[in-house]
Image (cartoon, rainbow, N blue to C red; front, side):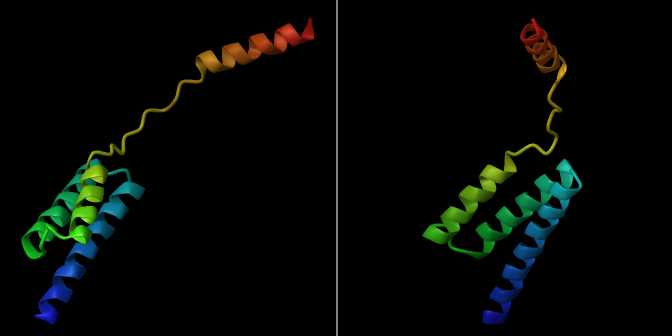
Amino acid sequence: SPIYQATVKEAIYMQLQQAQWAVIHKNQAIYELSLKQAITSLKQHFDVNTKPAESILKQLDTLEHVSLNMEKPTSGTALELLNQVIEQQKL
């Protein structure tokens, strides 16, 4: 029914909002759980053989493999090289 379909879409939308919240707060566990729930809901309630559903599932699968824990870049070697360039230009 249209009401049921609207309810399922709203639930998926909420799961994706929860994933967005997890990104902002760098919460990997909630991020992964929210995306898995959205994927499961899509697969249970929609025909996954349609182009729109395939596209959404592909994007969610890509997002599911993103790590929120990024390593900070090391600046030690870059700073040393920059200092060497500055010293060479002084000569």
